[in-house]
Structures are given as C-alpha cells and as structure tokens.
Amino acid sequence: MKKLITLVLSISVYATSISVQAETIGDALKNCGQVQNSLKRLVCYDKIVNQLNSYGGVQDLMQVPAPLPANRPSAPQNANPDNANQTQRNAEFGRQAKLPENTDDKIYATVVSVTRDGMKRAIFKLDNGHLWREQEATNFKVKANDVIYIERGALGSYHLGRDDQNRRIRVKRIN
Image 1 (cartoon, rainbow, N blue to C red):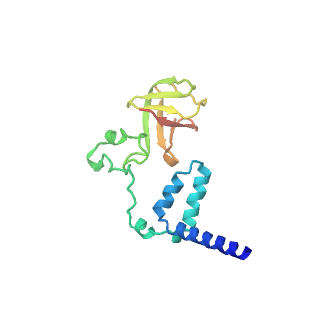
Image 2: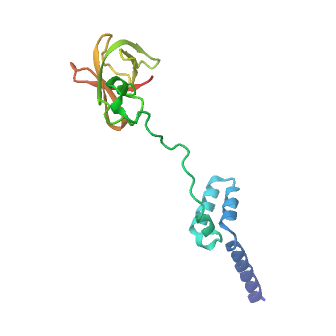
C-alpha cells in the first residue's frame, strides 16, 4: 500500500512539474508580478531566469525589439561655432556638462556684487551677467570690482579664483 501511495504521489508531483514547465514565460512573469511581497517577487523572478529554458515562448520574447530610451541626447544648439564670436561661445559656460570644443577653459570677469544665501554661501554676480554660487561655505574673500577667473575642473566642476591668490573655490552657475 505504501508503494502505491508513493507511486501516486510521485506521478502527481511529476504531472504538476510538467504543467508548470508548459507555462509560457509571459504567464510566469505575470504570476511573479502579482506577488505583493517584494522579496518573494524578486525570488520568483530569479527562479524564472534560472529556469529560462524550461518555459515555452522564450524565442518569441527574444524577437521583441528593446525600447529606445525616452531622453536621447539631441544635437548641440551651436553646431557651427566658427560663425559665433567669443562672447556667444562663452555665454553657455557653466550651464552644460559638454561644451563646444572651442569654448575657453577659463574666463575672466569682474565681480559686480557678492551676496550670501541662507546657508551663508556666497553668490557672485559678474559683469558678463553670470551668477555663480560657491558650493560650500568657505573663507574665500572676494568683493565687488575684483577681477576673478572661473575655470573648468574635472568631472564637470568649476572653480573660481583670483590671480593674486593661490586659492580657489568650487562654484556652480545658477543662471
């Protein structure tokens, strides 16, 4: 009798495993998507990936093209910078991560005014219309009518300094 029960149980387990394997990948993904617990849902998705060959419809899924990213980079606004003069090229200095190739790496300007924001970081208004804010509050002294430079640094950062000092601060353009 025990052998008969064991045989019936093993046949039923085998039959359910065959029916699970006949499930398509889309059905399996839908079933995993309905699991509320995020950890259990992740385990379900991992199980599908590990047993990918046992599901039907995998080849159909591979034929679907991947979606294109929604925010593809567009062409630069100033495609022919040779026609623009130097002030037009430097108008975008500090606003975008990738500048046109012949934009200066360093610009000079005169400080019109220096104000402080709520976190006591200096905001510099320059004679060329730029507004720059220092990134961390420092004791770097700049006052109106000082001639300063702003230069590009590594990884899209910018530094403000004076030629008569051997110090500079990290700044970000805010207008």
